Amino acid sequence: MRFLELVENHRQIEKERLQQSEFLFQEEAKKLWEKRESEWEVERLARKKLMEDVITIQKKQIDERLLVARQERERLILDREELIRSLEGYHNQMKMKEMETKTKQFQTKVDLLAQIHQKQRSEEELIRQEEQKRKHQEIMEAAHSQKHWNISMDKLKL
Image 1 (cartoon, one colour):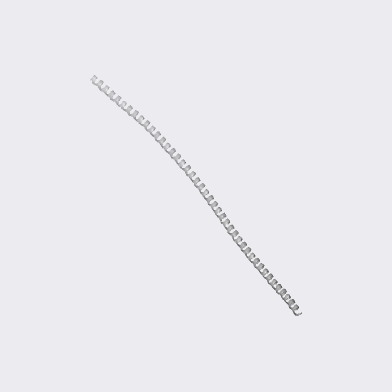
Image 2 (image 1 turned 45 degrees about the vertical axis):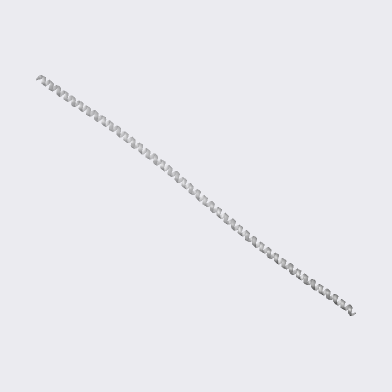
């Protein structure tokens, strides 16, 4: 009996040790699991922060590209407006030159027509004067002939 008690006692101690071992194993496993979960949480938070940083950097890059594109578009608009103003100025200059040319041509035409009329009037006046001169000469010749005729007739009468 004593032996049975001793075996029973030993078995009981062994059972308790086994339970303690199992309890320690479970505690150790629980601690390891908690440690692993803690590491996973740290890694998850690190990944989350990294993703937020990447998103922030990408957003900043997109904003910078948008700003550069907006500035480029504004510069192109200003260049386009300047080009339009230049073309309008050139167009206006060309119109002014064309108007000046037409005005000069018109004035030249008017001057030439005035010269033509003046020359025609001068020629007409010259022709009129020559006609008067010719008529005067004819009258003078006729008078001279008449005088000679009268003298000749007077001489014949005598």
